[in-house]
Image 1 (cartoon, rainbow, N blue to C red):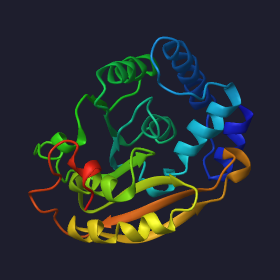
Image 2: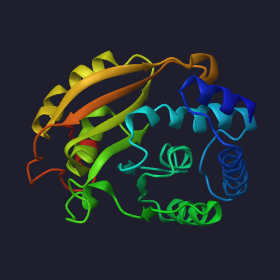
Image 3: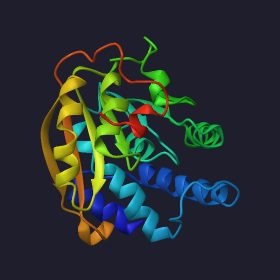
Amino acid sequence: MDRLISGAQRLGINLTSMQVELFRQYYDELVQWNRRLNLTSVVDYEDVQTRHFLDSLTVASLIDDKSSRVIDIGSGAGFPGLPLKIALPGMELTLVESVKKKAAFLDHLVGCLGLADVVVVAERAETLAHDDRYRERYDVAVARGVARLPTLAELALPLCAIGGRFVAMKKGDIGDEVAGASKAVEVLGGRLREVQVVGLAEFTGEARSLVIIDKVSATPDRYPRRAGMPRKRPL
């Protein structure tokens, strides 16, 4: 896993031999389950290292390894949450995946890798965010390629504690998308901190950015709206 190891070093992460072995196991399980469950179209060994594992780790600098409660919305095959957990074992992680077969894969993988303090929730974020066990409980909410930013903000910010942050992982030119989300971010209690360009294009093959939104005030109780509405009629 030389590409993952060298790319992680560029991010300031020195993976131990045990962590590298966990990533190898992750890859093996991903490929095996992908034969019967459509988890990802990217299965090449080096491509998974860079486009999935390394891409996930670009969020690591925004997480306190020792105390952060992190929620990954629309986790799918576990990205970015599980690579972050492998690299930062001290954090608490909740994986949200509404497709039950994918959630079953995540449960299996967490057990296979022996990861502690990881919870898999097979539920839609719109429903979860109205449950007091999850609403405004997290230091960091992350989402990767789930929807456009106004929709993501409505799904994620209600789950962030005041003083926490939401990190949306994006690719390509996102200037218009960020500008178009300003109203939603404000209404939901957020404030755009910055758009951080990820300098790993030689590894990932394309420009990547992290949209970092601070949670500065409580989200009004009515948000998020019922399932499907944030995507169908974004704020």
